Length: 99
Image 1 (cartoon, one colour):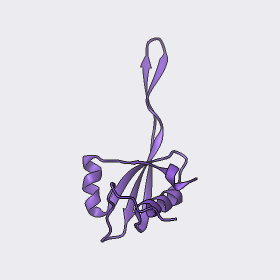
Image 2 (tube, helix red, strand yellow; image 1 turned 135 degrees about the vertical axis):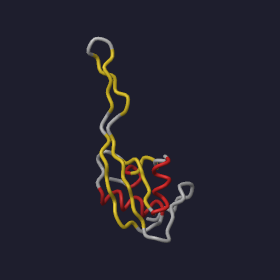
Image 3 (cartoon, helix red, strand yellow; image 1 turned 90 degrees about the vertical axis):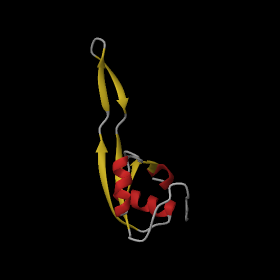
Image 4 (tube, helix red, strand yellow; image 1 turned 45 degrees about the vertical axis):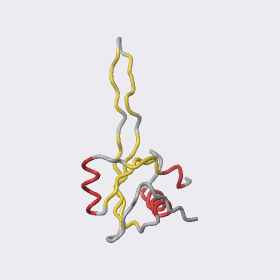
């Protein structure tokens, strides 16, 4: 899978912002990607050295509407918590794409 299709967006919440002080960054990733692809994509796009990747599956959220009909409110996806080496930071506004 191409590294541009692996990363969807960074997750910016209070919890993920507090984890950035420990050099852990959270991303929404493609549901078909694995840890190796996520590590390669982050290192290529942001130019940092990745030490570990933890992946959390996010189930789709459904709600019953009317007479047994199902409405999907959130599609299934994955979140990846990427730990990078100390003394390195990721600036989400600056990309350092290397080939």
